[in-house]
Image 1 (cartoon, rainbow, N blue to C red):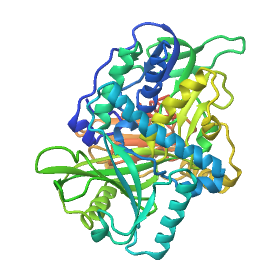
Image 2: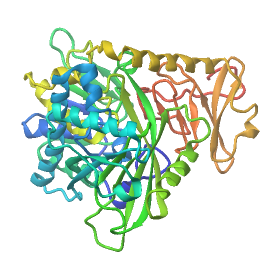
Image 3: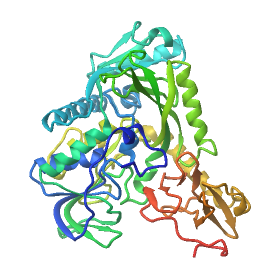
Length: 522
């Protein structure tokens, strides 16, 4: 069963099957309703179920069918946005707590794999952070600075190495993070979902959530409503949908969506030493093997990078794959490229994810802002949220608090929100093309009709699908993603299929139906 996230299946889709679960056929009452069956939602449900709580998980697609299935599945204590940056923005104690939580997250995955007997190719291995520029003096200083910050955070086994597995082809020193890990995400998610059910949780697929109501002040219960009119009433609701779909504005001004691109290329077994690899480029590249412990003469080298703001890639999304392939061929002896896919990364303005009580809510909880550490952050959410729901004090609660305000990150907050404001200029510009005859088969284009803009898709048989080009979330004009065949919102990252149906939030509503004959949506 392929991911619903885009047109290009990932290597995980090609090498594993995901279990199916029934649709939600009746109204339910439960202790906790988890919206989203990715790694954050299922890990949260797993720990709640093991603690004896009644748990219902809802997802509008298959388990692992959203951004979890678009990962490269690095399990790292190395931090995507640097421990030195966390220390600058939040202080030394925050950096220490972050490192502690990351170690606990990777350890938790290993423990779940062992206790639930999940065959998912989990393996411990070293991680290597290397300079993007061969023998660059400034980048060496960056590595030294991060090593020292990692030591202050408690990761005292991080070392700067002159000789490392890829030193000869790539040049320069590298920062070694020992005891990192990798796994096959679909096999892990399949096993985790089965474990949720084994411990008493219930999972429902095809349940598109259209409404979430917080508990009332008098102690009433939360209500989750689906498009099919079914409701789940719960004491607590966890929204684990990559970006919150319960909140219209507040959280979306504190983080920004980016597209990231991945290729999987055949490589001779043994030609690339096992490890996790990241460079210092902006945006950075990240590299791993599919299964270094496997049999056969070849493996798949998985390489990601070429990030850009969602909906702001212009017409060159497919060219990102070509650039990634060129970068890889210059450094690794790859053969045929067999897989190409992309995913969505949510970048918090102050580097740290948001896991905890939704701002202003009583019993709604969120996990978002994973940055490039989605697998580790998702597992941390599964450790932290059950404790918070139970009313327990937790040392990580303040660190990940979604309500936090980081004054030192004001500049980044302004930059991202000025970027969002600039996207509204598209409401007044011409369309991509002037006439529907200019929309190629299998593609989509935005066309202006009077005072509005229309998202027009032409199927390969010539059939046209016409929708409003205005994102229902906060009314930005969507952009056609020619790599994944989706309509992407450049403001807050909502994504829609060619027929206008929702793929990713924050929008819960589809693109409105429209007509080429009218000035507006019909």
